[in-house]
Amino acid sequence: MAFSPLVDQLLDALRVLPGVGPKTAQRMAMHLLERDRDGGRQLARVLMQAAEDVGYCQRCRTLTEQPLCELCESPRREDRLLCIVESPGDMLAIEEAGGFRGRYFVLHGHLSPLDGIGPDDLGLDALDAVMEQAGVDEVILATNPTVEGEATAHYLAQQLKPRGVTLSRLAYGVPMGGELEYVDGGTLSRAFMGRQPFND
Image 1: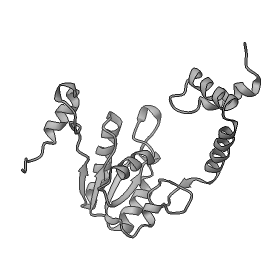
Image 2: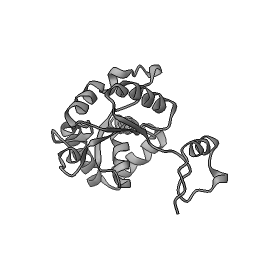
Image 3: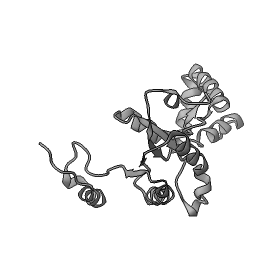
Image 4: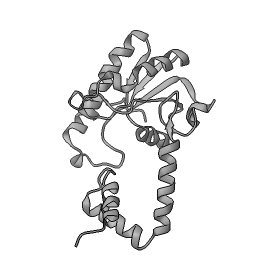
């Protein structure tokens, strides 16, 4: 049995989401059309409004409807401490964890020559402007612990070193509550390299 053209278009539209294959798209579409049309209408309205109105913060480049996001507007943030992340999702994760009171800069990706993503695609001119305006003393390179994330962190470190700022990298290692026998070798190796003095 084939679906109607409009249902097929809905299935194709849902498959643009990451991790949504044909079967998941079909389950979502059937749920919205058979059980929750009001939810589908609400989803369509909000998605359309977000696609039209959400842009990027002029300072940190995260997602917002305003010229400056809430964090960049806040006078309680520490201007001299800047955390560079790959995505708005990474920024949100750090905020939800708590403890960081500085500013952010979102790259919107990482260096990946195979995908055609070079330094010009990461907004480094905007990063230079932020560095100049804020008088940043320390930059935390919080790119992901992947090959591309590491390459991006090393590239940024080389670019920022002449500014004389303190450069730091997020520590990686054994998660709280984790058991050593279940931790992969790469994580254990990084944990040993980043070990801290024991203070009781």
